[in-house]
Length: 420
Image 1: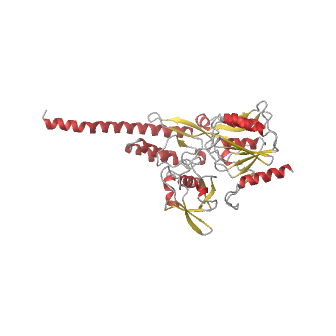
Image 2: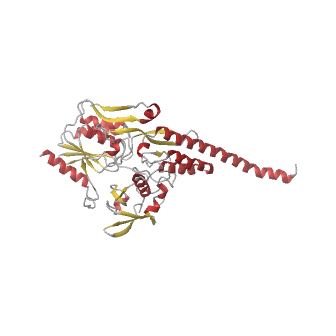
Image 3: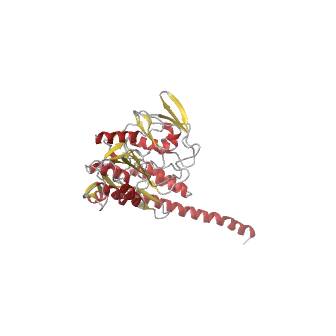
């Protein structure tokens, strides 16, 4: 073979291998997307309250897998597909630097459209939004100099059959969470004054969140106070909680603070906490597996029970503090206290995370993803995500003072009045 032909074959060989590799990856991405789409199509239990056209989602995103070259591109495509069900309890177990932080665990701002305007409803205590001066009631004007209605477009569902205000709220909260690398500049207006705020300056406090302790406790006069710091998934919390409860046996009342529990947890921890406050078995939450009803026409539901533990009982009044960073299993604990009539719940609405999630693994990329499969209910039949605390706090209407803890102040006043 002439030398120039040999050189041509050598030069072309890497291109042929690359082309074969790209084709292999494209096939894998397509297979994994189909697995992702079909899993949600079969098992997701909240399509009944969404305006999502899930068939249209497949038509929009499946063809895009043919253009993918890298895993980060595939991750971004999956994130965009998840935006279509606008559910903060549906997520991947992986991300890229350009991924939006998760809501509520990765954000310090809760916002929603009120009377057509994007309004800050609450800021997370001790994080960047609060530290830079953002307060409830402020109207969002721009984010990183982009008008807010334009800025939410990348996070807004493309497949809706009809308008849905909650899809806009989801997109707004996702926008305000920011991504992992771009510092946020948020322009806000209140009392006809507009100013810029920088919640990630001088450092992004939402990255790699750490807590000094799993659980905090102290005495407020003769009232016990316990705060759990986002570890309801950790069984090592249990001996710590038990030990603290033993030291608080002689108090007149107890405040359980669940305002920093956005990442959820497990029912073992939940039942262990609840067991301290009952003397007999109690139903505390109702489950419903809709996928079985969808497949067979036969409804499947059940009640979950919490049981007392020997030698562990607290009989005094209890107040549970909740806010928009009370998420998932913490919401379950909250409605259980309410359903068992064992505590007064005080605060804002919670994270309103839908149901119980199951986790799935894609066959090729091995990416894990989770979404709600079981519907969850208060024992009175109310959907967990629709629960409103009996002592409700509207932070937009409450006068705000830096350093003040309105929730705790109201709880102490409530317990004092109850004990009179």
